[in-house]
Amino acid sequence: MAVITESGLIKGVYKTEPRIFGDDRGRFMESFRKEWFPQRSWDIVQCNRSDSTQGVVRGLHYHFKQVDYWFVVSGMIRAVLLDIRPNSPTFKTVQTFDMGDDNIMGLFIPVGVAHGFATLTERVTLTYVVDNYYDNSDEFGVAWNDPAFDIDWGVSEVTVSGRDAQNRNLVDIPVGELPRL
Image (cartoon, rainbow, N blue to C red):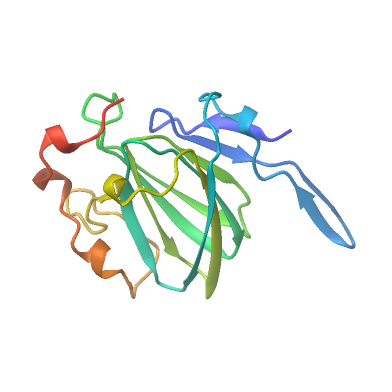
């Protein structure tokens, strides 16, 4: 059984540390079980894969109708989480996790927590399961480089998508347009 712990900084974020079985052939682990998480009624409806090269920053994205569970298959990322729920006791809290080959873990990200990652190694494969089908009307973002948060992404040369480059700073997003607990 994996060890599941709440992040301690952002309400509703959970970290999983899988039990790893290894021998001279390789290793085996369970990377996800629905029963590990407090939102037990959620149904996994889609699994996604993201492949990125070194220095790519994806995010910060957020949703009103979707939770994510991330697991790095290969490589290393710095996952960045920002609580943007105005009624949360952890509103505006930032937390980072270096995860992947050197720190095998999963990350449960609830609705209203903006999330992104930077690729720390030459190549990264990230898988994530979600509880709703892709819906572009539920795709929102906060600027990855919002000066209010001074986030250390762990990379010096950054590549971002055109969409992510246009995300607004949190202060420029009306409170009524932000998710709630």
